[in-house]
Image 1 (cartoon, rainbow, N blue to C red):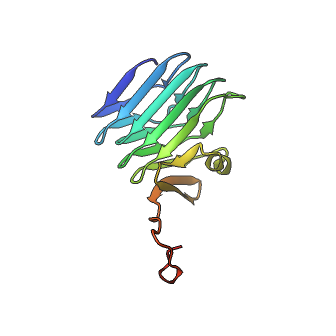
Image 2 (image 1 turned 45 degrees about the horizontal axis):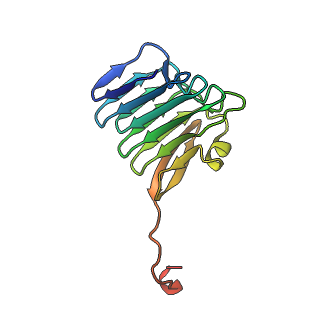
Length: 169
């Protein structure tokens, strides 16, 4: 809450974690090789009005339920960077605050992966852009049983001169 924390090694949490409480800006960065173990506990982003939460994952984040936007205003973003993994073993909820006003997103870079169980509104979260690929990529959604994995793939290059005969249009 109101802090910037960088994890290069291993951090094991014994409680619920909140990033970006009321009126504060919280940033959690997990660098490549770093890991945060928060299972089976909850991971809350933007828990209070006016909170700002930024989570950058190039390492690994293992958590229970993830609630993004628990108040009525603020912003929250999870950036899953190349090589990053977020494994969410509980629910994934956006806009738990009934009338949340502010940007909320999980942004997946090429080479990053977000895996979740119990997504409350998968189609709505994807179509609204709450779960999205980083610029220059397209979102890939794979569901096996109750587990959904989000990754990103490179967009095909734009043709410089259209030629239907070689597949460039």
